[in-house]
Length: 563
Ligand SMILES: Cc1cc2nc3c(=O)[nH]c(=O)nc-3n(C[C@H](O)[C@H](O)[C@H](O)COP(=O)(O)OP(=O)(O)OC[C@H]3O[C@@H](n4cnc5c(N)ncnc54)[C@H](O)[C@@H]3O)c2cc1C
Ligand code: SF4
Image (cartoon, rainbow, N blue to C red; front, side, top):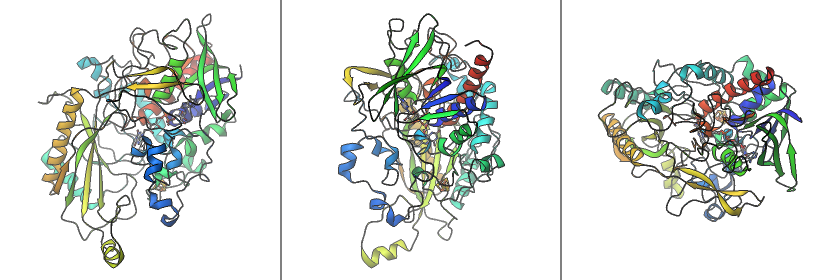
């Protein structure tokens, strides 16, 4: 064996698995298809506005030619462009009338550099939902199984937030919360007075407000409230693989990282029922190579890991490795996006706020909790909220020239608030990732085909979320309220999940309760593909907790000689 463990992917989940395995004393190889990135040195977070090309805009021709999908992501701009793949080099297919936005970055650290850092736990309302209403299969775990792992990852990552004592949004060992501004406080007061079941809380986010000695030892510092996080953060103030997990793994002396290494397929030894090799193509030289280890973790992101497994066909697994159930590639889900409303407030014109807080507020799910509400859908939705003064908001481009424009920019403009809904999406077998027969990318790897649509339940969730958002803004005194209309194509929330789901039964799921493949003992998958349902909260914190839990379970199994 070359290594004790191989981890495919260095993003949020791969970073966690590498850290945990290395800290358990296992010689671990991380294979990353993208280029190497130097934490700090390769970021543009210290570029002043006048050094950012085109004030952040990317030319339309460049977008349509190379970034047709990626440029639809809110965080894509000329200072963060390097963190997205070029769609022209990494194509995939969809049916013409069913677009899917596959938003991704291939480089060391993956999307841990660009993520929005919103971190919320799932609860037993989520883990029990499939069993209760019969959509999908039952999660093989409950909140009690994952709660200590949430604690572990939150302490290490550093999550700032306020404890609320809500059953649907469990609390954690938070760093001090960021302060809500005057408009958010007024909105909170009004919403909670009008609706006792609703709570408005400051965003829980992976930013260090008070670094612990453990954070400082890794070279991380407190957040400076600059809100340029999608460029990378030289202070290491937000959690990423590069600021936190990979440095911790490196400190053990057990970590090896190879970049520009595209994992093409996994070899399977039927006699031993194990993965026997990980085949890699060097992205620059196109040379092939194979690595062996006692255990293999796929953390290449939901669609990336599914692509590898589907491509690892053999006479024993003709539909893809570990796919006796035929669940692999199916049940693709993504939170429903495009819900909510935006409005302008006439008041608080004499008030401003300090700094550029890189996170807003959160209004967790309130429908269909203890009892089913009088609504025509199952499950629910939550809202993230953001406020700004209209002419001084970073993303706003005031149009004009000369003295009139300069005068206008001296005034911060009126307050605005955007409520952005995230709706649960149900698992459906037809929402599916497959490989395109006969079409390959520049490295000879079969292209992915994504066929995924929202259903009637998602549309009804969206209607209700739009109505509720507009009603809450109106009640809180907002004017000029624009409710969102049609929902966006799936993929847009960048919370893709479910294509190698966990479950009790090997006949209907790919992974067991520890993210271990039912069919292949030394294979674990811990990215979003493992998710059995979406819940309504941003999922990466749950992926982290599952990754840490699975890595420690694998280390136990290796230690006791079971695998
Ligand atoms: C703009 C934006 C905002 C977001 N905001 C939030 C948020 O607020 N909260 C939240 O919870 N989530 C958020 N997300 C989603 C979050 O980034 C993902 O859920 C998370 O990064 C998934 O972790 P991962 O390890 O599965 O994948 P990634 O972080 O994408 O890492 C996967 C890695 O695998 C590598 N890889 C892929 N295929 C191969 C291969 N064949 N061989 C070798 N390596 C491979 C990739 O290059 C990549 O480095 C956001 C994402 C974006 C883009
Ligand atoms: S706002 Fe905080 S986390 Fe974001 S780039 Fe600035 S210092 Fe880093």
